[in-house]
Length: 217
Length: 220
Image (cartoon, rainbow over all chains, first blue to last red; front, side):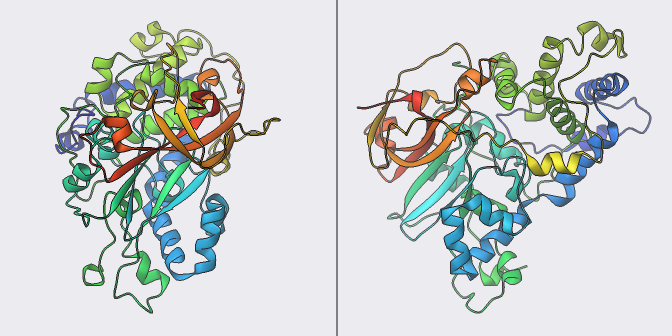
């Protein structure tokens, strides 16, 4: 896999498992050797590694951000708190910490769509979205988002009205951006749980739109 | 530094290809690579800025041909070797040849880890002086090309923009990445039109905001 291509082949899945040790890829062997040396030296505790992995595999992910957005759609006072101090408002829902220390929200409107990128590395609001997808870290996205954002949206199948401006947020410092998409029409009276189910990860990066009520899972 | 990590505006990579129902990890070594990077970072031997600089200092050919977790592992290996925590001989041998040395922070246990992740690494720091720029001010980014770390991307150097917000004061990565101290500065969100960045041919319907440390900016 390369940064310049997305990861479509799943060969690693088949070849990376440790049945007899003979089918590990060079990078898998290398990571295993590094872990083994660092554990033997006492620099890392393998159980601490397991806690990190479990955190980002099962606890911290885009459902966190979806709850924030659903609350913002439902509660004008909460939205106002997000505008004034997003880090604190997000912490009200229990989300914070690593790569979410300094949060900002950016709101989509009929006249402006927001798109978040990190051209220099892979900065991403982990506390609300989890770990970034491969495409977010890939060269095509990081290269194109700041020069041809409408083209990037087309790659995602998103077509905006021509009079909708696009604002790109390049995460060059420690501020982390969460897009609050527009609430879909036809969701009047929906509770936060139903609304959150419409909020996709990509819609909180700006690379997608929320699901419509018809698409609701 | 001007290298392959600074990708904004480059062409030729083809379309963005999102993956349907993408898993969090694509191979069993990836979560180990992530966890090793975070756990070693928690030893306090280097900052996130040093870590980012280690990644962007990798050879551009490697940087553009490796996956992101491969980049992390390569950079982590460099950092460990530079700090005398690991040797090339040990990597080749696959086992320990020299004893460990004390680290600035003790290695976290499983019990420590949730609090470490929940705390993160806030990098806002107070500064004594008032911000030089205010919301609405026109500013011009400096034409900086440092050999070391910077967070002013090439496409946004020597460009005119407007201060959109004053974000607070934060550790300056340009010095912190090189153990030159935190030197906190005011950070401003600065917005540029697409045409200022990319010329008259650019789509007039978009703008780009970046977060700039005060020393990246001049009065126009």
